[in-house]
Image (cartoon, rainbow, N blue to C red; front, side, top):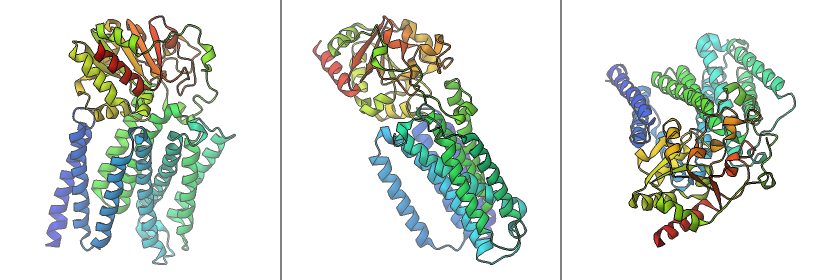
Length: 475
């Protein structure tokens, strides 16, 4: 019976799980189908776990049940308690946990196969050359992902130089030496004889942790969407390497899917910012503050209150809402949905312009607006909405900055020159809701604020929108 389960049932479960992973990932690519995609992928993971337990045969289910309860409790509390503004930090942590799990599994194999047995042969002789190298790579990528994700988490929270780049002298040389050292340690672990395999394995773990820290600290907050996506890819590659270590085909497939999709998303993010991945990884973007950003640098800024904004919105036939990180900070997604409903009831067409790197992680604005049940068909990507701005009566920018800065189109000296932006400046009228004239992550002046068709509304986005809603109701 056990042979039948291992030879027939388990492969079928793995095949079904792999297919569901692919289908779930495909559906996660669109806002309308993302929830069902998440459910499908979760079901695939459940099947994968069940298949693995059946394949292992005799296991201590006390630890399995305890892990399920503890993990489910942590995940459930995080899903309920974590605010939308902290979602990028949670994603960064989850990436780190994935890397940590892969590294720990690889270290467990080292202890079980080499240390506890007291073997004096090389790891390559005991477990095979390719598998020994894979164990080393799993430790390397997993530990790097863990420490890099923790640094990304701290940067997103503003606890490391307020998210700004930290530029160590000679960092490229240090990183190169650490990288070479990591490769040497992988080789030493795989082919060293005479016992003591745990020493290069532990040294590799420490070097990889240090490398993860040093690779992420020079990257500024403006590049965090790229970093989060790249670390997600790393966690997938670490999981795939662990699959080779354990001989688990499904882990290889699912890890490869995560790794490949993460790399593709990273490339999409880089294209959206008109920057190469190498340029992002070198870091330093926004370190010197760019063109400044103090209030005194603006000379032609006009502002108004909620009453004036409501009067113009009342007569508008088309309105485009441009959400940014400030919308998430203010937790104003429900307020913007209420305002949109009022305008739609008056016959106005309302859409939302989504820039690929708006917010602090890929898809941040989509998730934020989905929480407020904004209809999927109203969410338009940059390439779709940009031609529409010229016929738009009013655009409302809520907490976005660099992604609507016309300097990206005209100022060749600007650090964001060439970055695709949302062309809100083409609208007949633009309202920018912002607490102040402070710069975005690029640390530069936003020339949109001085355009003749732009009016600033200073204040918290949620409070401003609630005031506009009250004014609209009174008109």
